[in-house]
Length: 161
Image (tube, rainbow, N blue to C red; front, top):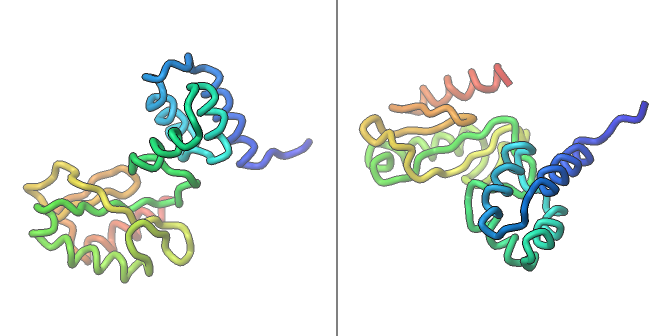
């Protein structure tokens, strides 16, 4: 039995999602969200097919994908750490927390740790302003995060991955 590669599976899933679209331009964002939710990213090789389905140029589709920070063009790392960079969190120690996270992970914002397993991303307001600074790990919000708490939360997330 021949094994399929993850990329082939991603392509098949993306193709099935694309086949289910009506092609109405108001459905582009829902399609991109569906693809991101199913695969974890928008495969760059699907941009041409998406553009054709919506009667758009590849540049227009690429522009939408890159404009919205939520969309990815590459598979995500196993763990995604999002640090709040809004003013309330910055005023309550968010800059020190960011510096600690960059040191602990060995990477800057918009990058991956040296082992490639953790991505560090900014997020602009998690709605936890009263309990700043805040962050999310794999979509789970955490408030009143200190550098020590960051280390504990990250260690726990790595254990469960």
